[in-house]
Length: 341
Image 1 (cartoon, rainbow, N blue to C red):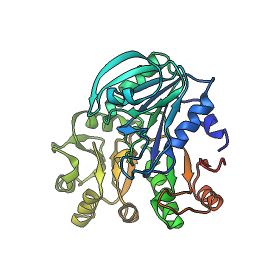
Image 2 (image 1 turned 30 degrees about the vertical axis):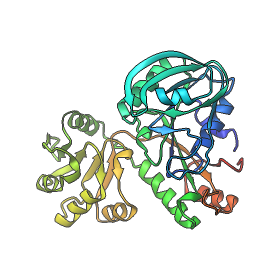
Image 3 (image 1 turned 180 degrees about the vertical axis):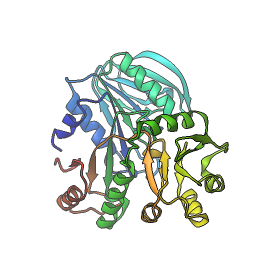
Image 4 (image 1 turned 135 degrees about the vertical axis):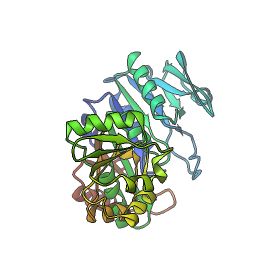
């Protein structure tokens, strides 16, 4: 893998690494970045949930461990910290608790392996990242867990790297298509009207669901969650230009709206950010072709994609072909983590 990937992150303080599935080479990407940053940056590391185990906790295949250098700052759960083989200095406690204990911040006093087990809540990740920077980290890497993309939220990280790989399917074309759609979803267009952004932000502060109308007026509707709010959406679409939704937007919600009315056509469904779009490709395409529009208030800064052509279940793709096909289809840099390209 060329050093270009290090160049891509030079202007960002917080970088998240998310995977489309387990065993797509995400930890290898993290280790690469750590090794290349050696002597250049003081790093802070944390994770969403648990990662960094000797054996994958889902597939039980051996996996790369996370190797850090002396001086690295690590925010991880108490139990995970005890399992790390670095000599460490405790810098502080956070008051944030996980099933593996409180998140502890430590400084590595030696090179060695660490076990990362961070918080699962966005606001806690943001708080920890800010703390790591405040005590001297030049850059904070946030390692993902399973296929969760929460840490890609712009509320948490300034830049995001997406890892994909052969483990998704024995069919390379299927993996390519799934990756291309994931990139499309994560980079859904930002709403450009500043007035709309201001009004949407006010709605999001106070409610799970709101509407902005043609005359510029807006209102909120009280719902426990927007997931089952199709009835309320349909009832308030007359004259609406925007439907503003806090929380996830699901396939079910969109399909329920589409089967209930055609008044959604030309209306923008505005999400907080693209990590909240839990939409299958079929629904996404159907909604847009019918005239519906997805946009976000806060865009994700996806800076590159990394690929792993080898599946731990015993099959592999042609690495060069996989890399080149994705480079043809994506308007982002694509790197082969395992192949050095």
